[in-house]
Amino acid sequence: MNRSDWPDCSACQATFGSHIDPDCYICEGTGKMCPVCKGMAYVRDDQDKLVPCRCGLAARRASKSLAEVSTLQGQLLECSFRNFDLQKATGATEAYRAAAAWAKNPEGWLVIWSRIKGNGKSHLGAAAANHLNANGHLAVMITAPDFLDYLKEAFQPNAPDSAPSRLRRVRESEILILDDLGVEYNKSNGGGTTWAQEQFYKLLDYRYRMRLPTLITTNVPLDRQESRLASRLQDRQLSKVVHNPAPDFRRRKQA
Image (tube, rainbow, N blue to C red; front, top):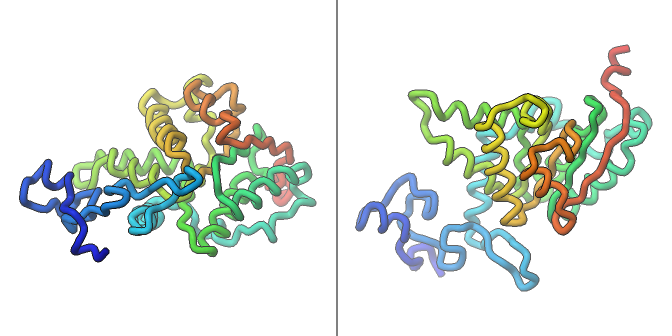
């Protein structure tokens, strides 16, 4: 079916009657809504797995997110599984294998945690994102601080869009790598704010309910995460948790 034959967008009709909203999130300003996913971008396949609809809406939304918020830039673009030095990152073998396997078959969640900074967690996340993007997927990688900054920028007087719309773009990405969900944003450790915690909850709760592929790195033990996040991060039906005990090899480089 051609797009011109699709039904009229119900969101535009409900808001503007016979007019088309050029900024409509459901129909992308065309006035026509996919009859299969009805603007949700994802559908269930024969095995009841959530997959992007053939209309391509998920990919278009993700590509917009990728251009605006991805921190996969500079040195991170060079990260791969081949150039991850397991000799320097002693003890990271399990995390390495888990990230490589997830990148080849991105289903469910992978959580890589360690109290130690500089031991390769971000490299593995970037390697997964680079592998996925090179193989036809659209993976968005963003650090926790950058995610919050991206939302806060929407409160500026001349911001082109709202914080909720920015949150939607990130949470509905085809594949998300959330890097450095750290102690400075963890309320139970005296850091962060209620607002910040709520944004991470909205982000991860949506991806949890929709079963969207997500890789998370963190320096905070899962039992010290905010309780709602901890519950989702440790759900064995969705999430694989891997501890990376490797030392800080960035300091070794400096030495």
